[in-house]
Length: 114
Length: 112
Image (cartoon, rainbow over the protein chains, first blue to last red):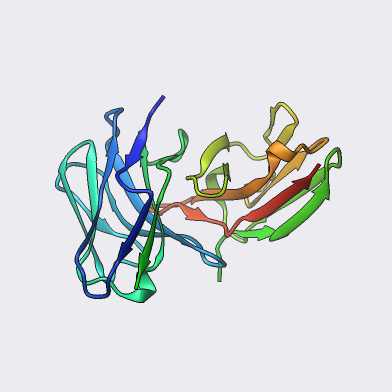
């Protein structure tokens, strides 16, 4: 089974801090994604990557950046954390872009910015 | 406006009851999936449907993709407390380069 591991389950950071959220998958998937999940808004795509060193903006990239130096690792960076970035962050990977095989999600990181 | 509308948003039922949740859109999807998410965890894939009219069964769960590939339903027979969770549908719109879209979800509570 594919496993997607997010480095932290819970994080509390201060406004203005630079925050790194790490995600690692162990099945050689090319496609990786970062979503945030908020009540009443569902999952919203922040950034995604179809290959190493490749990244594309999702629907809500403002205030975020990403890094994919290795195929198995996709990092989300909050350049200067703000309280409106308090959310559940979900990393996912997939083997194809057709969605036929679906996404494998990590357990999520619940980030609180104070 | 959500591309995928899920209904109901909340559902609380007694153990043993049947239920159906819906995922509707005005857009056509090349594939659609259902996930279940438990509190504090990431969504877990239940099923993928790709053919209009397709019906898939997973134990007590029955999934149907609409003939026009614009909607889907999930029916649970004899619900159990272990079915409690957030049910999400996700679809890949047809036509050209598109991104996957998720519904907001249906939060199901099955009371013992």
